[in-house]
Image (cartoon, rainbow, N blue to C red; front, side, top):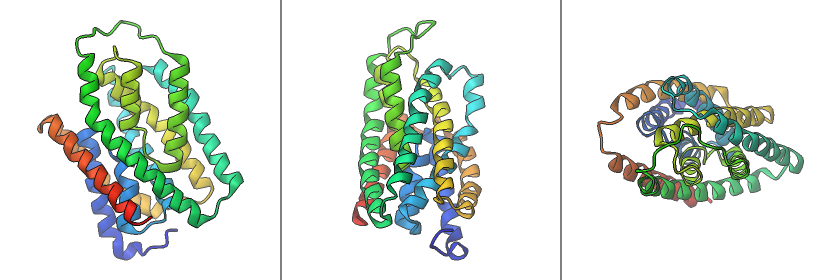
Length: 266
């Protein structure tokens, strides 16, 4: 259980879940990048508990998008498998490392905060650069069968698995941008759909691993889902109503502010 009074803070937790869910539905980014900093900086949850709870939260929220993406043909399943071949071992290795080293809680919390600040700033930069990267390949026709670059994809998965398991950040913005560099002929919708689907097993395995070592609060998770489910529904309906460039700038500013809030607590 978290070292906070959920009976008093539950309105703030539900409201935070709604805001994050709204942004996820609107932009496709934010489940990990915004939720963990919110839980640490605003709710007062310990970094380890925030990461573990947020990973399960992300797996549940993104799982709801798998079937629609599959139906619309937005998923390259061979690429998902290639990423998972790296990310699953990367996640398990990080969990094993945390278990074997059994680091001091205070030091681990401080390290997670520092890693989160770096990951948030990288995510913010990735969100701003993504349109410039995709514009470069806008005239390229996607081939019928996009070959999977096995080694780079494996290494990307390995890196994402390790980073996401430690910080819960990176599966969204960072993953999509690097995939764009590796697969410039793949359409944007397939890049996003593939990244979202790959994030589901990654966050689920990481979340279950954290749960096994006691880094999960189901009461906190339930409150977040109560707020996020309607938030995602409303945000999804508004997608396309606002200019994409404005959404990206807004989200980038929020991520930088979250990084700043965490930096003050280091």
